[in-house]
Length: 129
Image (cartoon, rainbow, N blue to C red; front, side, top):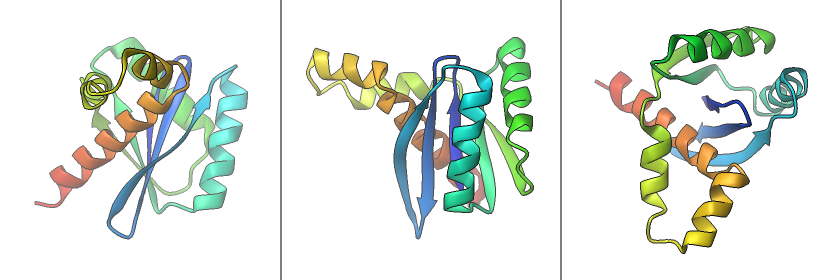
């Protein structure tokens, strides 16, 4: 499984391997084509059975995310899951870190990949029942 937290500036990425969720290096978006190309390369490398995509409540953002996912041309199953508050939860996990380190995590996309990890955990929790 590969999870994506798709944003306008960064895409958080996490993977589930042998019972462990690992945040991966985020994709910094310069444009849609470049970002889709980087995610396609990651999909080719990791060969996930399916994708888990965080989907916000905002309908405009949903349309943009669904369009981006279509650009990936992924042949497997794509699961969309509510991502509301995942970035806030990720930020709360970093509260014990120094302010500068939290700020850097936001800028360099690590926070987004942590959010992708939380989205993936949510998916696993809701589908393990």
